[in-house]
Length: 86
Image (cartoon, rainbow, N blue to C red):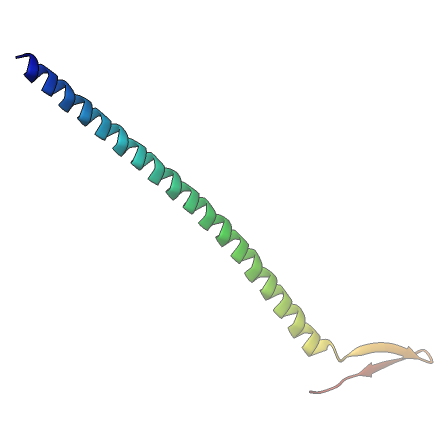
């Protein structure tokens, strides 16, 4: 009878240890997932900012191509327009 009780206590302790181990693994996986989600969100924000900067630069370059060769200067108080076609 004493051996059976001892065996049951060992089984109970083993089951409790296994539950604690599984809980630790799940907690670790949850932390890693949250970190990955935060990293992904940060990367997405940076990529969006970069994309917006590229679009603004493209718009700026396009405006310079379209209107960059047109300069108004004054020679003897007469407005002069200079244009170059590429």
